[in-house]
Image 1 (tube, rainbow, N blue to C red):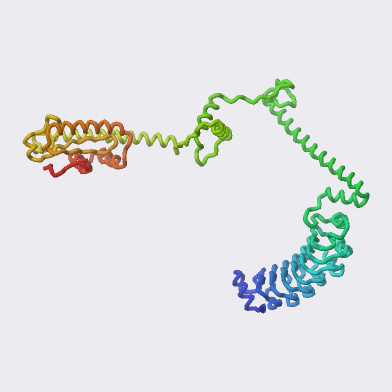
Image 2: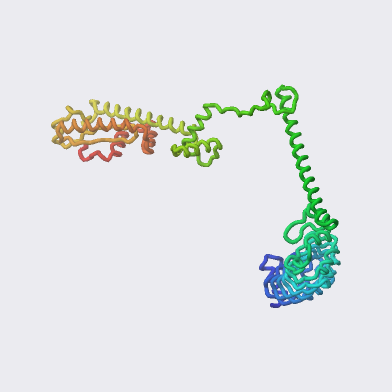
Length: 474
């Protein structure tokens, strides 16, 4: 694929970069199959250029980029670095791994280079690494998986004054060079990381002792290092002890005790006595035991003592019940009081409505109504022939209004039986007094407002009852 201006503009658009080349400080040309570098002259302000994963064989087409600091040309077919000559004055990082380099010639034009990655190439000799001596700022060098075989080739690395991180694994010289790691640490005094692990101060000291006096000197130096570490630990311990004693002295002064360096909590105890913790109050232990008998409150963290008490119950075969937790005790109390108040208002309203209805029926000016209060002796024989209805209005504390209507054609025994049934209903309603439905609350509000007459209340109660037979009513 040819690298042209149009292709570069398309790449800028694809990666949300500027269409004006000079405004871009980075450019992604990776994994596009480019065989050569071209038409990058307008991108004069680039600081990072990504060219990895292509088929580039030479860097000759690279223009002069005075601002470029990072160049990534790994995974290509580059055979020479001569194309860098005088074009990248402030280049800081260069990744040229996975290419076909046999020499690093051409790197001398990048004096500020600090990181160089040249893995998986074909570097073999000291001549191929000679250009590294012209990189005084190089501190990270990765030469893994090359073909370096001679120890003399590593002498070039000894001349790098600022080298800190060096990676040479994968080269034959690592396995053939005797005392490879020790020699590299001795020869490169600035090294802090070599291959797969860091270079510690103890390792450097023991290695230098080995280089000067052999294995015996190394053992002696290692012993000295161990004693120094133990002495440092002791100093730290003594310093912490001095802080504790100073705290004890201050606590003794605050408590009015004589001066000393002993813990005030141990005052008055003999040397052979054991310090006993304060015994927990029996009430606290009992409360914790009761709380452990139930599961924890959801979403809240409980103390370790309660959790341990619950585990102790389980181990002993005791049951742990499912806890029922109220959202808020004050809210629950207010809700209970509101229910009781609604119930009282409802019962008072029903009693008042019943009294008004009775007064209306016994009034001499009231029209003759075939519905009377049902009693065992109160059935009119004339009304038995008329299929009139006798209505008995009963109220339950649950707020469910019930109106029972029976036809006047029944006998007195039937009426007495139904009265007995009504009494049983009232007794059952008293048991269910705590249950109040939403319909009861709505009715309570209507009755308590005083805006509805007693007759309307009775009609509303009758209409809400599924047992009323309206065919016998006038």
